[in-house]
Image 1 (cartoon, helix red, strand yellow):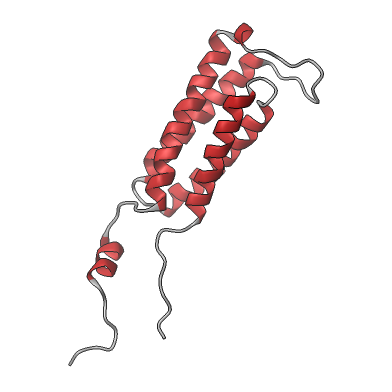
Image 2 (cartoon, rainbow, N blue to C red):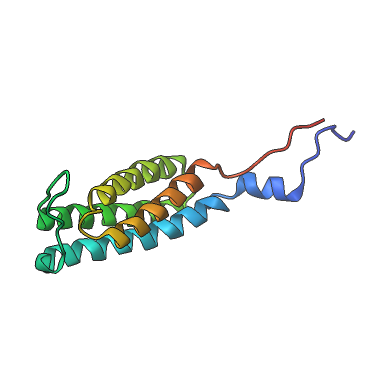
Length: 143
């Protein structure tokens, strides 16, 4: 006898596939590129901190070399979390949201030093967090 529950071939394929799909792949790719940009930002701040123009009358003042190390380390963590997202694991999504959120805060604090670069990375981080929180699949309710 046939059962009342029918499973489409795509449903069966999605439930057995261990790899990431859809928005998760989008987030992983953006994390890898955004993390690489943060790594370059960190290297630039460490190697040539006199290259970065510091605004004088701002609410906070940071050491650019120290922040270069922070951006470098966060960039490496973001790239590693982006690579881990290709596995489709839930822990990788959670780690991705946390690490990208920290990167967003670091870039917000970096605004007076490199405003355009920081705004671009903040925008990438917003898209990544949205893609990671959007979920992997959408299921329709049976009528």
